[in-house]
Image 1 (cartoon, one colour):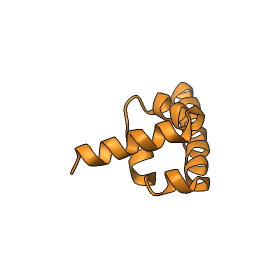
Image 2 (cartoon, rainbow, N blue to C red):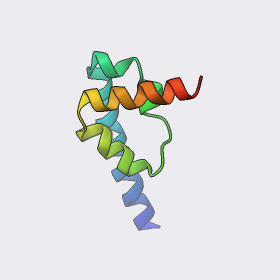
Image 3 (tube, one colour):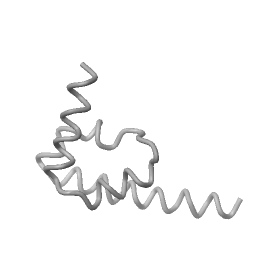
Length: 69
């Protein structure tokens, strides 16, 4: 039980950091729903959003949207 709470807290912190980064970037903000979607594995995805180059994230989000049309 305690371990699950620790993971949930860690993931919540990662999500908050990723969300703030996306919201502060005009280029990423337009893809917020895609970037912050439920991607697996969730913690790894959030770490990528926090650390990757904006151009890489935007290119990925554009590809996802184009492929889902």
